[in-house]
Structures are given as structure tokens and as C-alpha cells.
Image 1 (tube, rainbow, N blue to C red):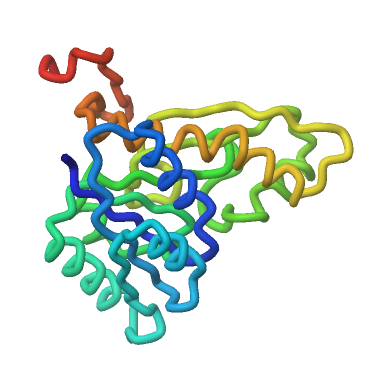
Image 2 (cartoon, one colour; image 1 turned 90 degrees about the horizontal axis):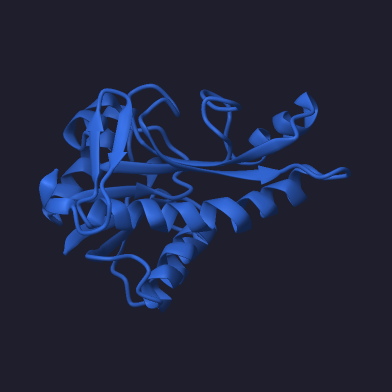
Amino acid sequence: MIKTAVLVSGGGTNLQAILDSMVFDEIKNCELAAVISSNPDAYALVRARNSNIPTYVIDINDFPNRRTYTDAVIDKLNDLDIKLVVLAGFMYILGPRFVSTFENRVINIHPSLIPAFCGDGYYGLHVHEKVLEYGAKITGATAHFVSRETDAGPVIIQKAVEVHEGDTPEILQRRVMEEAEWKILPKAISLFCEGRLSVEGRIVHIAEEGQEEAQ
């Protein structure tokens, strides 16, 4: 079983999708060992506790800078012997040591089809506002490994979602979550925990089920 931690900051809708997928055994070989929040008031903590998942708070306000906060998060993950880290609405960019410590072991979900509508400043509702302003007809979500550059790591899975006439950012955000994010994030976690992902440069190779040992 791959010991996994989910990092959160807010409501935890993507965390709930992970929890639901685990109930239905859609995520294989995964032990969800911790939910860690940067915000002590995050509702995601309630979701985790309701599912009997251990929770930890590393409050961003308790640290003077990004380096010390990053060190605290890394120390906690190492103390828990975490092998996979999932960013699910974690609203803080950790320092470069985090990425190097957990290289190709950090999965993030982004609410667009990378490389469109991504990078610095593209998060949350802002992404969907920009999609609508641009007049795009297709958007979606991307599960990817985290790199030092924002939203630039190797792509694991993508799923497209249509933009409808009359969409508001809020309506589009909900559709992208329901049709894409909540489906591909649990799938990406399962693929990692099953040992079916390998990274070659920017390319993520997905082994067929039953071919894990051939990697």
C-alpha cells in the first residue's frame, strides 16, 4: 500500500472525490494516511475526520517565510513516511526543496487543459473567468506531476469539458469539477499507487493493467 497524504486549504471538494473513490474501491493500493491543511478552519479537515482519516494543521500564519513553511511540511511528510503527495485545493506554492524531495511523487489537479489557462495567477475561479473571456469552446482539467514551474509538470491525465452558451464562471467551475476533476484525480492517484506510471522527460507513460512489473 502506498502511503499517501492530501494537502488542502479550503472546502475539500476534490478531497471528497478521493474519499468517495476509496469507499467504492476505485483507488487501488492506496493508504490515505494524512490530510494536511495550511488553514485550521478548512472544511476539508471536517471531511477527513468524518472518514476517520488522520488530520494535521500546519498553519501558514505560524511561519515567517516560504522556506520555513516548506521545511515544516516536508518534515511532517517524512515523519509520516509519505510516498505520494496530492495537492487538492492547496492554495500555497511551496519552495523548490519540496519538489526536489518528492520529485514525480506530487500530483496536482488543475481546472484547465494544460498548457492553456495555466501558470502564475491561474487558480480557482480565475481560470474559468479567463476561459469565458477568451471565448474558448472546450476546457477541462489536468492531473499532472508538480514541477518547480507552476502548472508545468508532466501531464498524467486530461479530460475535456464543453463550454456552454450562457455559462458563468461559477457554473463552468462546477461542470469542470463534476465532469473532469472528480474523475481524473482519483484515477491518477490509483495509477501511481498501482505502479503504472513512469516519467521520461515530459512524457508520462501509463502501463497497461497487469504490466506494472515491466516498468
